[in-house]
Image (cartoon, rainbow, N blue to C red; front, top):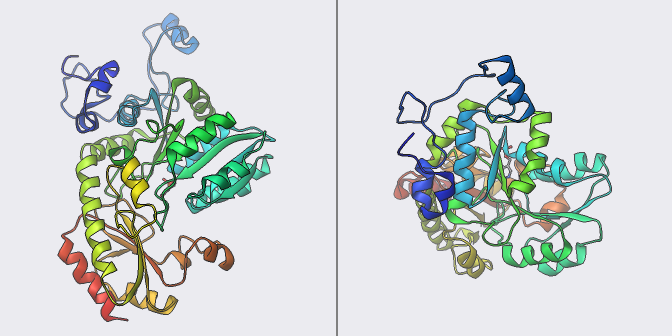
Length: 399
Ligand SMILES: *Cc1c(COP(=O)(O)O)cnc(C)c1O
């Protein structure tokens, strides 16, 4: 079909164009918008055709746990956006991380992982990978020497998330990629907070990118999904695991994510603008002890973020003067901000990390990672800035 972007031409186009058009292959109906292929299986013309499909001699769909046209469009679009050969979609962000682990790791291997990763990622590494004889060392995302010191002969993966949640720590992707190459172990980057609109880890030297599509790729809080991105070689084993184990993405969810991607860069710029304005405003309030946002010059990761990101993203956090009581009073004082642990939504969210997202950590672990009782996280949505300030002022009035 004409009027499509050929996969091999993807690098010739800007991200804005790819986010809207990459991966689309029209059917004979000539539909303008991408169709949803709600079908579990596919039919063949003859017994010989069926045999050829099953043996892999003939390309084409067999079963939607393996391939689905709507999911394939999403995968090709994400691959184009991240500048990668191959992407494979998963049922959730955690399924993307699990599939990567199952593909890259075996019993007796060792992983070096940032201390500041999504809480469930820590559980996956400690509890479940540990069960299969994989050892994990956790290190500071901002201290390259700690990563270097943690690497062993059997280190098979380096894993990080940048910017981190909720303190916006910035890990040096090129430096850690160089370290990973030296160690002969792949660097995996969870690019959930920036998306390819603001940061392209593969171009900075990382080997694999994982996403929770649930957040900014959707952008409107509708579906749970994930994706793993990398070279065709590396992805082969990830795809093999997904086909056998089954945590694949549904066609319906893929379609929702495709619609979300069309506005990705516009949204990420608007999220970043609202977050920066709020961070600057909060920094000037007398009730605030400090603000964590890499867009602020006061943030220790500001210069590095400017080098490796094209925007600072939507998530910020701040400490109110006082303790948990003040933080809770502030949160309960706001009226329309969504009180939820989710983020990456058009709706601004507010949460108290110490008693929700980071409540499973011990008090000591929380103190070590800066999750103090007076810390509040805000994920800036797309509402009108002054209205966000009005609601946050209600929080200040409640103090
Ligand atoms: C939410 C999130 C995940 C997990 O994704 P799910 O889609 O909830 O499984 C992983 N990493 C980061 C950074 C996240 O924010």
